[in-house]
Image 1: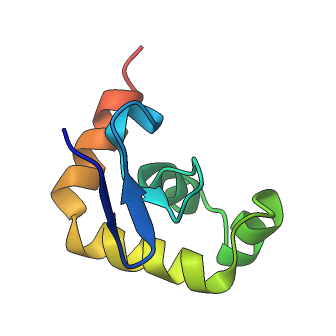
Image 2 (image 1 turned 90 degrees about the vertical axis):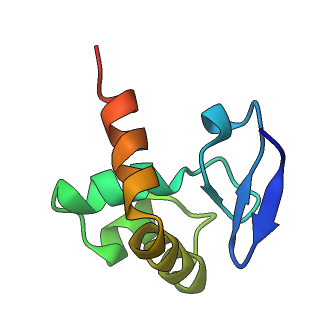
Length: 81
């Protein structure tokens, strides 16, 4: 898997299992999607992750919407015991 970096996200082998992360952080997009599904609001997510801002969070939601299958696979992979 090669490194990728585009509008608001990065994917690097060895960082968060190669999952898409917000900017240069180690916040995987799938983790944010899971938090939202658990009932967290955007405001709560922004409070929980001080390195995140509204623009980066909006980029994460856009990425999740356009890569839904990838996000679902990551959530399924990471929720296995």
